Amino acid sequence: MQKAIVTHFDEIEPQQCPCGTTRRAFAVPENTTATIHLVDISVDAKTHYHKKLTEIYLILEGEGHMELDGELIPVRPMTTIFIPPGVRHRAIGKMKIVNIPIPAFDPHDEWFD
Image 1 (cartoon, rainbow, N blue to C red):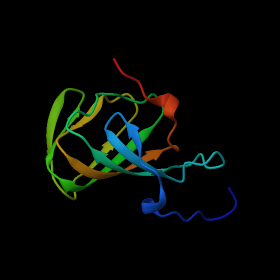
Image 2: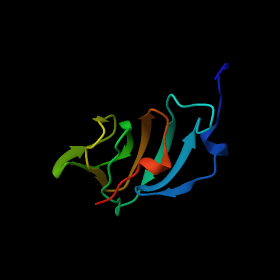
Image 3: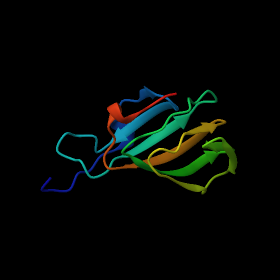
């Protein structure tokens, strides 16, 4: 990747994900470094994990819990969570978050028990 990428979340079509709906910025084949997602969490987020990805969550709106390897952690706006590979996780409650996957998001690296 040789140049900067600029994107507008309001111009990205939302798509379904295990947590609700997401808009994924910088998800282009030539970018393998990182992506950033604006996610609307639904109350029925599915527990999942990644074998390669690390995720950083920033809670923007709403309150609830993050389930991290079975432990419930209360979250509120401005809570940040670092989720390394292998940690089973899900959000519980309606929230809007920013998710930064490192390396760039790979849809083949979402695993469910």
